[in-house]
Length: 404
Image (cartoon, rainbow, N blue to C red; front, side):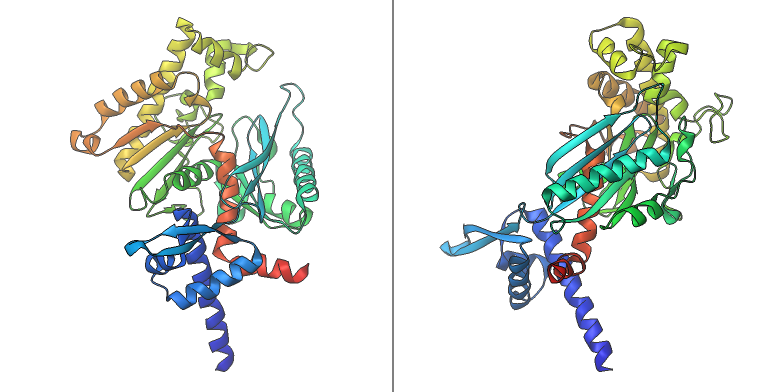
């Protein structure tokens, strides 16, 4: 009985710690009294937990704040100089590895692009990623790097921690990613679908402004996926594959897809398909990749711009289906396909969507192109790790201190 009471107290304390850290992250800088009012916790509880946080180095005091009636109080914030997490983005043609502080700010980043004719195998890529992660841990201190997040393309079976299919990259099918990183790394590595990671980054960027809204972030790149945020949380579905809109049919008699279906959205609106449409058999060769095409579209090439416009129109058709099924408040489009001509993409998608949905639904929808600075999918991978640390700070930080 007493043992159960002790366990319950530990669970409650960890929940309170998590609540305070996540609230402080959203607020940026605030007083202990404000945190107590915000969370509903007793001020004595907040004071005691903040004392632990200060001792751990996860929080710091940042001077005096002016309150009501001229009262002054000491402000606190997440300490950006205390602990670190690693973010990793795995894509079809490249991977990126970065180090981030606990506010989500990027410290360093490295991107490695695969040569078109010499793409390494899955195991070699994973070993490269693990090697770069170890190097970051060695450089910044094994006691300060708490966890890592890995964003992967899909369809990603989250419940089984493996990729089911990546069109044009069969090397990843059924690779046991979690088992690899559990074996190779001394820190926990959390896996997430790349579109969900992008949604996490935008959700953090928007703070609490859309906490009660339904937000959809569309990662339109080498593949197409959607991260769906409902009530401030990612909607995953039964197996974790929710948002796999790249394999949504937009033409039932259309092009065959590697998934076994026909007319999938990613066969018409992804960057890989756009490059194929423009360059044909030369696609992927030197001078015939997406970066080259992006520059030609920016320079106003009429033919290439028309190919791009058609791809954006196809994306709009897929978005119509999302709207009719989910009825979101806000849709944000990002990743590679949003780069060549954001204005044309927004105009084309908006015109396509407006024609295809009810006027009442359109009037309540906010649709925009992402203005996120940096790579939201890489940052989102780091945020996945930060969120897990903030879920159970004692498990990661207090234990880490005891082991030092």
